[in-house]
Image 1: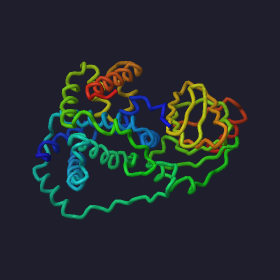
Image 2: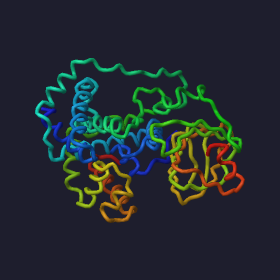
Image 3: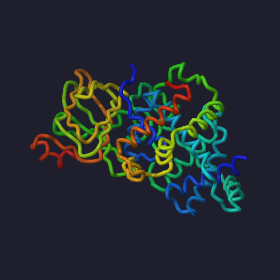
Image 4: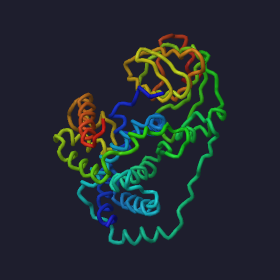
Amino acid sequence: MTVTHHPGEELLVEFAAGSLAEPWSLAVATHMALCPDCRQAVADAEAIGGALLDGLAPTAIDDDALDRVLARLDTPAPATRMNPVAPGAVLPEPLRGYVGGDLGHLRWRRLGFGASQVQIKTANESAAVRLLRVPGGGSVPHHGHHGPELTVVLTGGFTDGQGHFLRGDLQQTDPSRRHQPRSDPGEPCISLTVTDAPLDFSSRFMRALRPWIGL
Amino acid sequence: MVFRHFAPRLKSYICRLGTDPATAEELVQETMVTLWRKAAQFDPAKAAPSTWIFTIARNLRIDAIRRENRPEPDMTDPVLVPAPAALASETVEHRQRDARLRHAVMALPKEQRAVLQLAFFEDKAHGAVALHLGIPLGTVKSRLRLAFARLRRTLGDP
């Protein structure tokens, strides 16, 4: 299985530069865990960041800066925590850490159209992050976006006007496009989605329902 | 010596991103502390020291200034899809790769380098970069893509 849908290069560069906000970074990092090519691209962008850093004109630092660094080295480093993982886990890090475990840990909340969701908190609330589960052969009602949307497929697959998306694929949707993703028949399609604005449903009924289902 | 070379450049980097000098000084010191504590984890076969130092400073800044977490894949995670052998065994040795990259960054056309510098040294979305350079957003994105593709070609990547 190979990943065929990747984030745009400008998104990878923003991720490497550190200018991409946490919610979007979570989607890029989750894709990267499943896509060695994009890990390499980000590593290259980071190397460019390193070269640019190296090329900066120096700014004077405090005279005692080195002494203070050495003094701080005398205090022990905080211990790092490891998340144990059961064999056969589906969710990669860093996503698993954000939801507190693998699929078995999730508490799904029903949405209106046979789908369910788990909302994910990040430190940046400017964008909504959720896991979305649509049963096999189901669909998300026709909608558009006021802002961009990133979707990373974790199980199953879906198709819309942009193509066919399977595990690891990342879909980048711009505000102008309306779509109606349909999940593949078979296992449910679970995806990580990041949106920075409420979905703009085509149907008035879905729009009326929106405050109740949290989309 | 790493400290004498990088600490003043780290301060420039953090200040350029809009942080006051006192906080920048603090972050520089924290970067150097982290650097020395994690020195054992540094693999010179994988990245140049400047790359590693850049990523440490970037992550500390995101934590301290933006108060956000930095989500990253965990290379020890069994769920992570490993690189195929051909990709994992780097054809270009890292020092050589680093030198090539440095030359390539300098050799970029001025407007492409400007877009790259803004992408790395301004905490701004590309819309703001476009405004700053007085060019349309689409142009920023295509210049950034071009610059990145050109640099990657010099590294021998597809």
